[in-house]
Length: 206
Image (cartoon, rainbow, N blue to C red):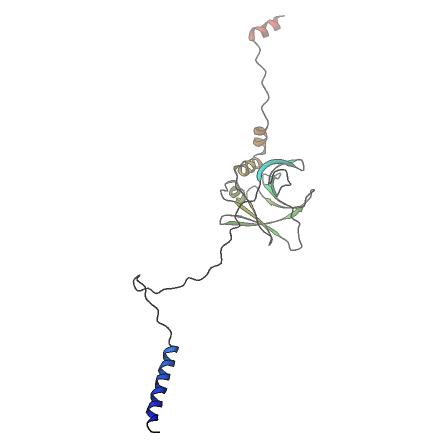
């Protein structure tokens, strides 16, 4: 019996050492890049890009007996349009949107610039919400000089991304100078050839 006691003690000691070895965390293995340790990069969700412009083109058209610059696919109702007001400003129309009871705003984003405009329902065969931009507003300059897509959002709905175009600046310039724009759009009347001086004198003497 006495001979078995040392043997049992040795087995118990081995069991304790094995348990301690299992509980210790494994050491990080250094790599060859200056002693740095291997690290696992965190998993990141893919970033979705919704900045692609909508399909369509900018064209001049007539709405409510007024010239407008509208955007949308060919041979369909417009998605968005710009009209002149009577004081040198512009009216921004989001077609196909209906006003709600929450007092929605029209959010316009161009790069880092963002503006919120109050909207009102506008009459017409297709429902639309309209925001007014006065003549002295800095937003006119930003729209006229826009080089990046223009994002139009209504409340929590998906944005409408409009492509930048020189036609926007030309139309806004025409709203600020309606007389110059109308003269440029109206072809000059042909001038009658000047009569010969001798024929005029002959007619007078007769």
